[in-house]
Image (cartoon, rainbow, N blue to C red; front, side, top):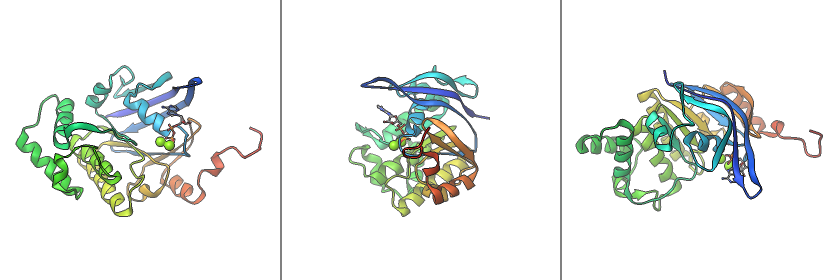
Length: 255
Ligand code: ADP
Ligand code: MG
Ligand code: MG
């Protein structure tokens, strides 16, 4: 059973002042079929965790381990991580000029599976997945992320999820900037992808709103690069009521 295991992870990022510690010992296990919500105030290190798992070169792991099914993820290139079944939907997706959505997805699928899907079946799969997400068929011929609206970017992420069927999906702020209708469609897509492939989900979010549509099994609150509290869905409900105030240092108080 695929398991993503993060143990005592320490990460620094390069800034003008040298290497700055951002994650200070994060421990987390995500199994197939489980949905984990990573919540926390702005700047607590949520995106850093996502980028580190994905292998972004800006982030340096100074301690701890990340393994997928016992295999060292930190020793893998970004491509190898994707082939191993890790999927990261970025908070700020990049444009890929000259590459259409269909070709991008087919290339990604080929890289992951090791063989290219036949054009005919692939076109059918893409069409079906796009219908599920209520996307305009013309979208398939557009260049990746070029002029995409916020909502289109999110749908494109979820389209990838449905088609690529990763073992573990990391969704960073997938809910940001979506209106309620788009949020529902995107959430349904995630839930459908979960049912189809029994993937594990790491759902990173500042707000509790998306958790009404995607039920987390576990909630972890990240504060200052550490998991400050963990619980079940009831913790998300509590954060919805109380916010993050109790996790933050009192102003003028001694620490
Ligand atoms: P979150 O996603 O929880 O809002 P981030 O992981 O984006 O938090 O950021 C955590 C901290 O690390 C912030 O103080 C942020 O300024 C800093 N940081 C993250 N990435 C970079 C980077 N590439 N360059 C400089 N500082 C960064
Ligand atoms: Mg942020
Ligand atoms: Mg972030």
